[in-house]
Every structure is written in C-alpha cells, then in structure tokens.
Length: 195
Image: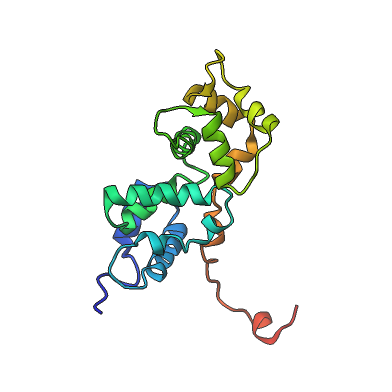
C-alpha cells in the first residue's frame, strides 16, 4: 500500500500547527508519530477502531463515553485526519480552556441529547463507568440542581465541575509523557559509565 504522507512533518507544517493549536512542537511531533503508528493501514486517517488504541483513553473512567462520542463525531467527519486528531485531543490539553472541557464533558454526559442530566441519565453514566451508584451518590450530584428542576443544566454542571478538581484532572492528558526527550550529545561520562 502506498504511504500517503511523510514520516515527519516539515518545519513549516510544525510551525503552523504550533501557532494554530495548544500543542508544543515536541508534542505535535510525538502526536504525529503516534498518529502514523495508529494508522496501520497507512491511509492518512484514523478509523474509530484505530482511535480506540490511544492509551490515554484506556485508563480514563470516562473512556466508554469519550469513545462513543468520538464514534458519533466520526459520522460527521467520516475519518479522522491528523488535523482533526489534534483538534480533538486539544480538548484534553492542560492549556486548553476549562470551559471547553466542561462543555465537552456535559455534551458526552447528555445521553438523551436534551441538555439535561437527570437521575436516569446520571445512573446510566455511572453504569457506563462500571460503577453501581447508590441513591446518595446520585442525590449528591443532583444537589447542584439550582431551582430544584430535577436535573442539571449546563450552569449547574459547571458549578459541579468547578467544585470537583478531580473531574478536571480526569479530563487533562499529560502530552509531555509522549513527547520524546530532546536529544543531547553523549559525553565521555555517558559512554564509559562514569558518574
């Protein structure tokens, strides 16, 4: 099969992406390497199945919801090219807007697509995360319902999100862990093992 893209981004492409995204040059290079690795068919885009192989999603308790949302979005974009890959992952970058993460998480939690997180939806969310919720856990979340409507809207959810620092920590991936360390020339001490 013919490889439709180069193994590395050009300096001009890197410069453009650094200026256009929240990622550093090192992060973009590492993410491009990961993109190329995940694109096993060498067709220049990722399918939903390829996207499931991203390790950061495997350890996230929201992984099923994140991947479901990615699969739903894929229908809009058909296939995920590198630009969309970066755009999507930017949501999870520490330098991206917290508001963007809040709205994204609310969107994936809004299982009924009615802009409401009611008791039934909250139970489904817990279950998708592999947790059998207690009545008190559901009531704790619903305690953020201002006006006692019986559900959380985006304003209520924002307050809930902002008061639970753990939620934001779950929504941030450490992209520095995938960025390779800058190469430094070996010294005499490195070569001969003297410390």
